Length: 66
Image (tube, rainbow, N blue to C red; front, top):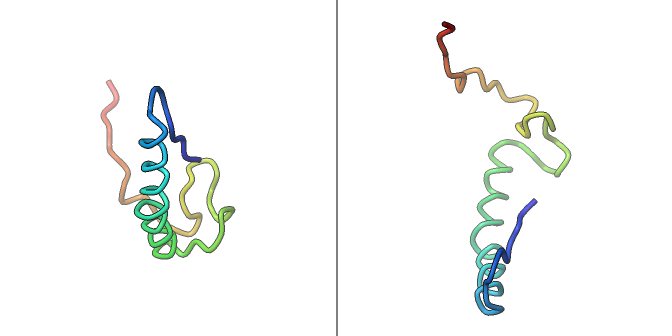
């Protein structure tokens, strides 16, 4: 989900924002999805929105209990 046009943006600013979203952001998101092997919007673990087949244990942050 993408939220755009927040607050008191002018029409021109909103149009520019949508144009940049389509030209810059979404193409990069598609490339990231390809790298992750995602071919559709429903190929994720919805509890964490990460590919089910990727091992993310390397991202775990250790913490100390007091």
